[in-house]
Image (cartoon, one colour):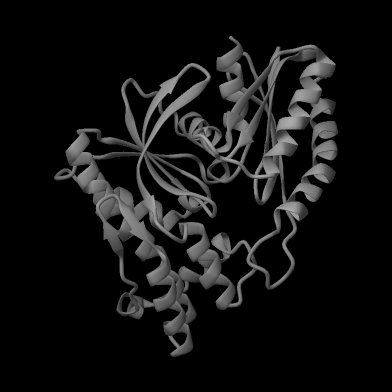
Amino acid sequence: MAVLGIDTSCYTTAIAIVDTQGKLLFEDRRLLRVPEGEYGLQQSMAVFQHIGNLPELLLRAFELVSPRELRAVAASIKPRPVPGSYMPVFTVSAHQGRILSAALRVPFWSTTHQEGHLRAGLWSAGFVPRKPFIAVHLSGGTSEILLVEHEKGSLKLKKVGGSTDLNAGQLIDRIGVLLGLPFPAGPHLEQLAREAGSDAEEVTLPSAVRGYNFSFSGPASHAERLIQQGAPPAAVARAVERCIANTLEKVLRPLMEETGYREILLVGGVAANLFLRERLRHRLEHRAVGGKLYFAEPQHSTDNAIGVALLGLEGVS
């Protein structure tokens, strides 16, 4: 017996199947096509691509796992578990999930994209929280600092901070495109940053933090000026990574002190960046700070339906 999870986000069509023990049986995803030189997709175009992608992904999945084995279908129906959260792209996973559950005569479990990210992060990192913890959701669509309690089939989230303008992924994509990198720029900017020489420390971006909130529009404007002034592209790319890491450190240190929580889960596409991981681990897991950081494997940090399926499994069990 198994549970199917479906997630149709702004840039990825994803499905996953887990068995009743939580073992991953199948996972596949398809990046949406973004025209060269563009910074993103209109929601209508993303919906159109999701509708075309899902049948192919589902047929591939059902070649390995028979639909007769499904005990439930779960889907992300909106971006975040808060009133008014809505994006047209999630109507695709919501409607397809309900159609499949009705056709197969199995329960339908609804969740959100953000909860799916966090649950997949817990699964991938092998993190079984015994008490509330801090979570950072860092992507192109969200940059939020959360306090989290894991409940059956859902996650109880309290937002305590986040970006007041650009998200971390938007900062990366905006500067990446200006540097001539493909969109989405995350993996390409990370690769470019590895070419930075010893003088890269001289190329810096400011960190704009107020309480548990932060801003990336100022760093983006500063990076644009550096590019116009002829700063080495690799050094600019490394400066972007360093800016995001410094910003998170300035937020997380006082939050750890205020709450007493020391366990931190970081998820989202930006959290797959290896420089970010290493720098935050070095700074926040230092003996004087006492943090314990958990990251999903890079391939499970990005948009995926594994967490959606796991939440569905918990919800119908």
